[in-house]
Length: 418
Ligand code: SAM
Ligand code: SF4
Picture (cartoon, rainbow, N blue to C red):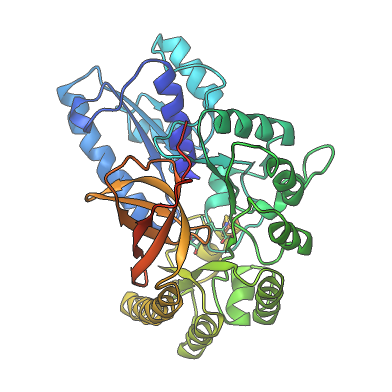
């Protein structure tokens, strides 16, 4: 979501004639887009703000704008704490950004700006906010309640992006399964995917994040039936123990999650699955952690994002539970799942050795082209021609838990980005 919002802010600034600076020190304007989902992220924000304060002392004309989840409802309090910040605006509050720019005569771009990206992939927020209030999570407090973008607006934006050369869109929401419940005609995500499936120039559609308590059979069947929708789901389980899931207020049990994964794999056998796990939630015993460990072993996820529980002021867990799992134990549990998952992913990815896969080329790193498969695997390959934005075929040679290396297959019909 932050990437999507940064792409959009870059779009505004680009249309006002700004160019990207190479560092803070040679910038006229800095937009700090923040995340505070864990304390470590918030500490980074505070560190960067201290750095910017020093720069502002040297260059008083530097404009500092702060957005993202760091901006809470007490903006006056934040203004007092950080007087050198020129504007604090809530995530997605582009009208607020516009009116500031008009008041200060500092151009930041036009109203209906599109996301700016140098890759063929764009992120499209389709639903903002979250109504779920998982007990550990700060997001609903900082991003507010769910608000869906009208179906027609999303379709128009995707068509325009596709016309400009975007090949892949990722539809975003904290819970994409809630998309449309607040719109007059109550469309759902499956309806939106079906509409976008007929945008000619678009090659791939992705979406994230799903919620295990809300994902529908209709959505799974739509993924199975639409060619352009990639076979990849982000389905955070968070814990493999029913009591912990209850304390997290997730709204499902381990058995329900297991059945769901079974249905998904039955309907779309090639579906790749990613999940999120929090270890060291308040009161998590060794036995409860073992339940999570066993579930990760059993589910054979393609990717697992693991985080150590971080108490967030104002959340239900912060109010009701003591953060009583020592940080060394959290680290130990995190490492244990990471090691397990490295083995699982290594085995899954090794099955791709020798296979030909379709890759959408997103950019270049260390002399190699890189891109992703439909199943969201990162692939690197070498080729002298400019392959940016092309859908190419790559024969996989080396595999690892995190990425694949392969050889470009020249089959004569690789598409060039227009
Ligand atoms: N909406 C998604 C869902 O339902 O899981 C995830 C959004 S959340 C912003 C991203 C991830 O951050 C979560 O899946 C969770 O694993 C992690 N996270 C959120 N709050 C956390 C906390 N207090 N401590 C540790 N990890 C946290
Ligand atoms: Fe946070 Fe839960 Fe909403 Fe995800 S669904 S953003 S974890 S409250």
